[in-house]
Amino acid sequence: MKKIAAFGAVLTIFLVTFASASTFSVVLGKDVNVPEGTNIFYWSGANTTINAPSSFKIGSSSVNISILAFDNEGGSVGTGDTLLLTAIVLVSGKPTSFPWAIITTNEEAAVVQKQAFMGTPVYITNTVGGADLNNIFVVTKQQLSVSRHGNSVTVDFNPTSTITLKFPNTPWWPKAPSPIPNLLYPLVLPAFHLTVEKYGGSIHAEQSRTFTTTTITGYPPIVLSGYTIASETMGFYADATFTCPSWSAPVNEQTASNAMVTMHGINTIIPP
Image (tube, rainbow, N blue to C red):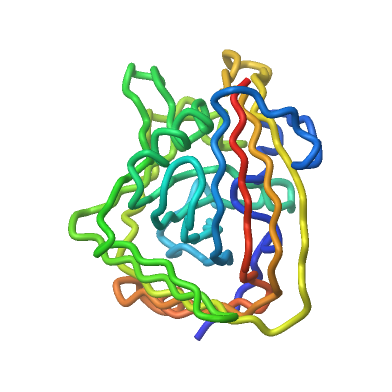
């Protein structure tokens, strides 16, 4: 069993940093002026970080995947279970995060998240070569289950068809070979089981990020959605155990000591 560190485990995947790929304005969730078209998620769940197989690399950079798994218990888009995945690589020795994929049992939630994450590797229209990059997948409740029992959360992902995650052309991946073909580096996400259990003190956080358009030298402007995602969470530091029979050792079974169980979460997705 391999033990790993979970980068940014106390923050939800909604609030990942794009490093050089974009800028954010920061406000407290409760201070955001909420316009028409705002959607609210009331949820509980857990997050941790795992190592992807060693065969999955961008250049010489190995990849970690941050997983936020939550049970949406109510709000404006109904109920359902969701996985939000972030790709994490080391850039100049620092972990750099990119929102990567959404897997959900709630089709209405998928539409809202697609709008918010438009322009990120979750969903991009008109990429190089004219194809759309879509890393949003709607699955059945039999394929994805997220449940909290007291201070522990269990996640079971059992896809009945292949879920292939792709990553778009640079500049989303710093220092990627240039030029590189469009939609490189696919990773098939197989069935897995995740257990996250409280071990430590409580965590309360209020944060917000706005997806704003930015420019990187040598590339066209990256046009992001302009949406703001505000999050308020209350939970506990936790231990996580991840098992994936389809992956080879050592990544087929991993533990993390700085995961998080979220007892109560509120995410507010605010249009521009």
